[in-house]
Length: 98
Image (tube, rainbow, N blue to C red):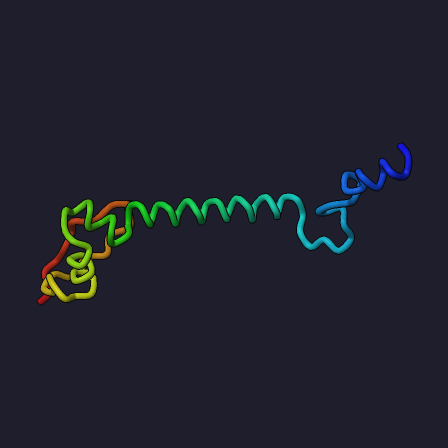
């Protein structure tokens, strides 16, 4: 390999990641960060597609404003939603507030 070839391919020989002396992260930490990011994006997609006001309105067959009124107490205020453990769905358990 001559100097011109080396200069063209220099990026192949440059140290990267944990090989750099100023590196603060290990390879495993970088992979964990990327896995956490992907999990966060998957959760955001699940919330947007299944648990958003729009998704709930579509599932319940009502307008999104109806869902908003229920959530802010503008309608159905006489029902207080129980706080069961989250199971990924919409709880139908309610108790009557007195």
